[in-house]
Length: 70
Image 1 (cartoon, rainbow, N blue to C red):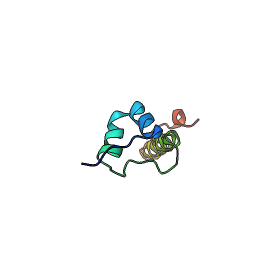
Image 2 (image 1 turned 180 degrees about the vertical axis):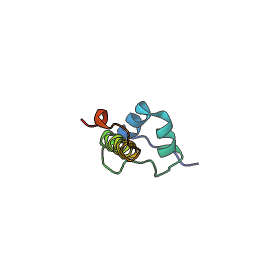
Image 3 (image 1 turned 90 degrees about the vertical axis):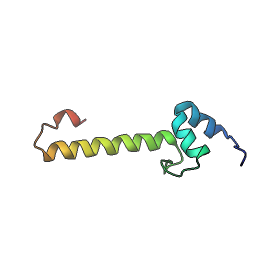
Image 4 (image 1 turned 45 degrees about the vertical axis):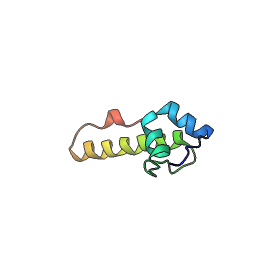
């Protein structure tokens, strides 16, 4: 069994989301690892992408999208 070495960023990751920590540092899964160096920047990008997809979906369905435009 490999020893788990914890960095400051690993501990911060655990504080933010224990499940993500488990997948990334214990199971050593690469995804959903952030593409950027900052997990906060990655999460902001993820939210923006989700908002864009929601906007496109609602616009395609002919729904009012004014509330989504900021």
